[in-house]
Image (cartoon, rainbow, N blue to C red):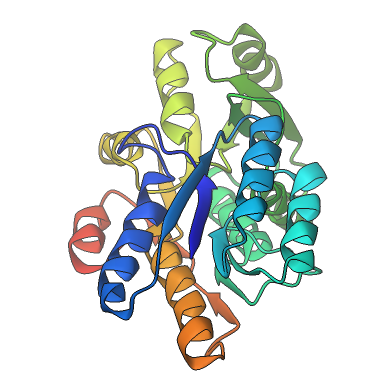
Length: 287
């Protein structure tokens, strides 16, 4: 079994959490003599993804747990898996026309619609909203794009008169001038952060005395949780990343041992977290 996932730089990175679930599942099946190999790629480097993917195919594992990241490249890697009869499970984002044996994750478009409904309750019809993509590279991943589509669909349908703006915020930029100017000029009342870096946006708003703008984001990483508790982020949507990694491995294990997949699609709930319930949520559920 091969693990082929984005490299997690530290414990406050989103991809640290699926890996926790992967390792938990692997510990549970350790008595079955399955050899595990880890292969990590740079989340912001398509060439690294392809290079690591080609190296993985050359090793010809029986099964792989992975996550779609680069639309222009992932199909080529998956095609190689299929030619080599390598079975694979997807987490985080699904690829409907792939030959994956299972998918574990949220329905991304519905998740974006939920974010849109939350935003509507915060700012009301007629208010402008901004979609902020905090990036270290240039590409927006498929799961993020689907969330954005769902968010736009809800806003355009249920918030008449509201403008929808978009901005890319380089993670390395200390004070993104274009982003701040866009907020001021358009009188934006709410910001949707479709990835795990809502804390970056919250910090920029506080730095520029714009912290009255409401933020809806994703993922219970430490920096997001702190901003949620401080009132700088209104809502976080949790997608249970530990469960994704765990169930992804177990679906592959069932394929290897039982020669069947018990559940092809494991769609995880869209959990809405706010400062009043975050501690109880964390203490009662495995993320």
